[in-house]
Length: 300
Ligand SMILES: [Zn+2]
Image (tube, rainbow, N blue to C red; front, side):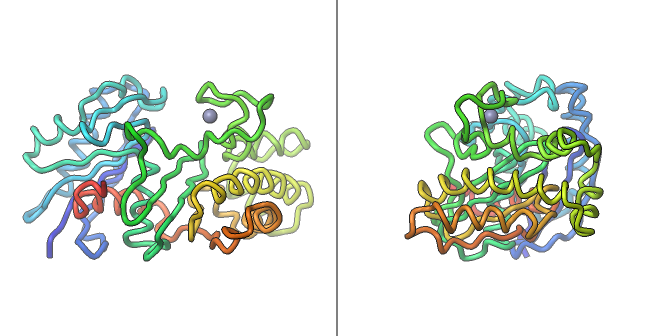
């Protein structure tokens, strides 16, 4: 059966896997990325990640990476300090030259969404939105089997939908972005403001499950804000399904119920029947979606 290598590059780790054309993981590997050490370090770990899973009959290499990517040239356009000096890296050219295999590079949010559509919780969807809520809010949109990327490939950044024009300054330089209100760090900050010093998602989860009022209130507040952003997403895109992934999504119904409530009240009625649920591939969405880039020739 045809196989591809899928790679997911984050600030602290690189995941790689060989995946068959049905989406099954044949072999996988995890290496550090040491993203703050700069481009050469990241590349050397990336080679290690690919070489560690390389086998016969590989059709190509798909890569999802944090940062904005030009999907036509496979060039990294911008990146955060978590991947230092990553901007300006001609990643597709470098990998094709080294491994002599067709290579596709895309933003990690797009790739995760593609993975969920191709082999996860979004199979069969006509219009799928996937929000990865963790340190930031990544996102991807799949429409008619293709990744929606905009004119230069850098669109679909739903996490930077502003919900408040005089709100909190976001890491992107914008103001009032939903990422600044509903990411993992934003939830922890909100809890601190309420006098709760909780630092891990697992602890938040435990407190929520044991009925801790303050924790439940904080989750409901960020869920409500996510709900207002989601209303806009629904009115613009009319998705049939919205999938939530990333650490914060593990809060499940504690988070989804307040989103649902706002959506059922304020979204334009025609789009309210959207399914809102947790993604199913978890941490594997990136490598699965990256391999789908190969099988679907970039999903353009
Ligand atoms: Zn922003």
